[in-house]
Length: 221
Image (tube, rainbow, N blue to C red; front, side):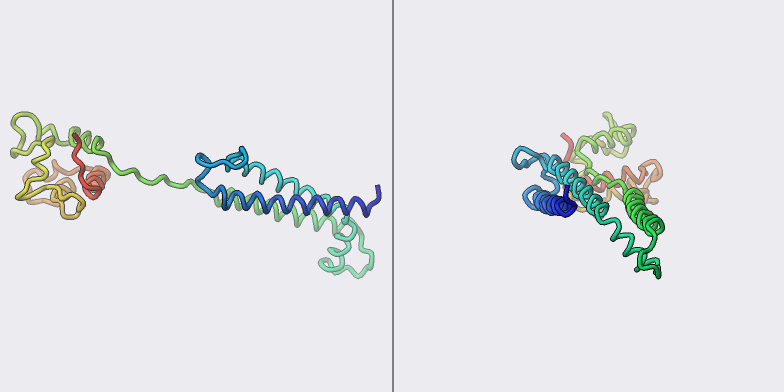
């Protein structure tokens, strides 16, 4: 087959594939933006499936570029020899420029692959706010031993809503954990209180109660 015709066909294929990359990239960015894989589809394909199409088109485009370079390899090594290796020979040898070119490309691709894996990390899931059920279990596990039953300590019952939201001196101020005395008590910041150390919870448990209060302190029914 005529070399000029082959070059033309390869260039046409590269142009078509490059256009297809642009179009599928447009689909993934605008009609099917990130986060729509479970809710949208286009022409029978989800965003994830269009991502696979985009990948294979990109791979085919890369293959045409490799073929294009192979068809013009003599020109490539000639330029590398004259411009980079500064060879005084008007027709530099093929081996050394070819080795330099291949090593440079391999180093570039290998370095990019290494950077992608080295820079990869897990995204931490947002911390879920505690539910009223979580708060109930926390109170049952840590407070009912003393503040439960028919004769709760200090007359405070850990499962009675009215004991937390008293009109005169509430322990819980919905929406404001900083102003809620309950947080001071379970944090151990009330040394003047009798058996203060017994009431101290772990930092994680205190934070759970604080988040519950800041979220409105919905009482577990």
